Amino acid sequence: MAVIADMPDFWSNLADKIANDMPTRLPSVKSMLLNGGQIVLGAQSYFGGLDVGNAPSCANPQLSCHNQTAIEDLCCFNYPGGQMLQTQFWDTNPPTGPEDAWTIHGLWPDRCDGSYEANCDDKRAYHNIRDILESFGATDLLSNMTTYWKDYKGQDENLWMHEWAKHGTCVSTLNPSCYSSSYRPKEEVVDYFAAAVSLYQQRPTYEWLMDAGIEPSTSKSYTRAEIQDALESRHGKPVTLGCKGGKFDEVWYHFEVRGSVQTGEFVAADPDGGKSTCPYSGIRYPPKGRSVPAPTASHTRTRTHVPEPTGPPFSGTGHLRVLTQGKNNGIVIGIGKWYQKGTPAQFRATQHEDGFTLASRKGKCAVVQGMFGCGPKINDPTVFASDGSSLSFNGSTTFYAKGEPTKWDKVVIHVDNENGSLGTELEVEWQAA
Image (cartoon, rainbow, N blue to C red):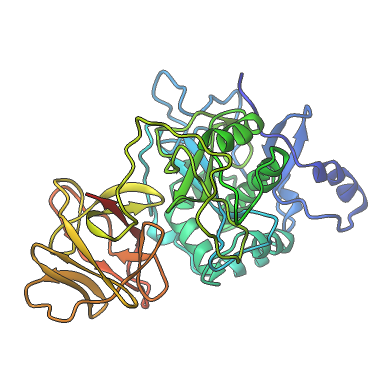
């Protein structure tokens, strides 16, 4: 049975707000309650005096990913990004956001087969998200984002800009041409963030896990089935679970949309592919800001057919895999560049007092002029660290590239993005050989 996203309780106060023209508790999105169960993203007069009706008016819209023939009106049908993912973080080192809440990662339009577009309109890759929201009077929305849409490096607006440019510009129903003649430039930016925050508030991950007895702990561990059951029973469909080094740190809720993102219904959907990265058992869910010892044997269940890597991460020999948005997206080859396909190179990790060094058959590995590389001319290898199975440099597991490699490209991996010219963020993960 399809499950349609429920309205937050605070929307029962919206009618009073409109009637009295007085501020009330934060309504996190331009939404109105319809028949008690569906969300209709609209009520545009709530933010900045916008005229109701600016967004597309869709009569009998189809549910995305379920059309049998080509759809011409992409203002009322999300395509090619027909499955919308509301994604959340649990950042503990450094702790990010409230101790009793997950934080927002983004709202992503995936194709129905699990692939996705990115950075679809450079002309609308705005760098002033805060100013845009304030110009529309969306101060309550902005306050909500400041609390719950957090960047672990403290650069919240950089995260907002990234999410809008990479994902928001790829939502077909948010194209400016879809709006009425009363459209105000950049109005779709408000709609994107409002939709993301609304869905986030209707998917209270921390609360749902606590209700199922799954709490942050420095001693307990959990199974993937326990976590999945707790969230699936409330969302209505399976969710995608993300782990790094056995630590539970991300959840993706999948939706299909009947109509536009602005005024349509978000219906819980099956994930568009097998993307969960958590082990079957021994999953740690640490409190924010505390160190976590090795898990105890409680709440675990083994699956004998699942191969376990030998030794801790970055010891002995292994391969380096590239992840973008938590998904496997290629390998690191022997010279230290990112490659889309092929046989992964073998790297040897040698322990060092402050971490470890890496070497491939091409030579030792180092960061030279901000770029990762390996070769025979490197005499002084860089000492790296790790966060679980993720490679870390200067305290960060985030690396950068100009873009994703195409079929035969070998892409340079950078350790920082100081001038903002590198559009792709990635992580490098160890896989024992």
